[in-house]
Amino acid sequence: ACGTPVYAAAEGLVVDMGNPANWNGGYGGFTEIEHPNGTATKYTHTQKNFVSIGDYVASRELIAEMGNTGNVQGVSGCHLHFEVKGAANPLAK
Image (cartoon, one colour):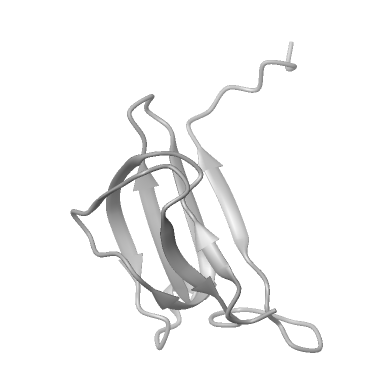
């Protein structure tokens, strides 16, 4: 549901943000966090962001609210698109 809290998957530095009022390549509102292990996570389609670029966030810290911004579809469009960048799949051969 829109307004559902979004929490950081792991600690890290906020390196990019998208204003929910803008298209931002279809992501709408978003927050991207770089983590100490070299991976990054991106949380998109948010209706409100609570952190800023340069903030260092803790694991499970509140960072945003789920929304329906950017390129979304469906009855309400409310959902979270979650990306993990730079991680290796331990099951891949």
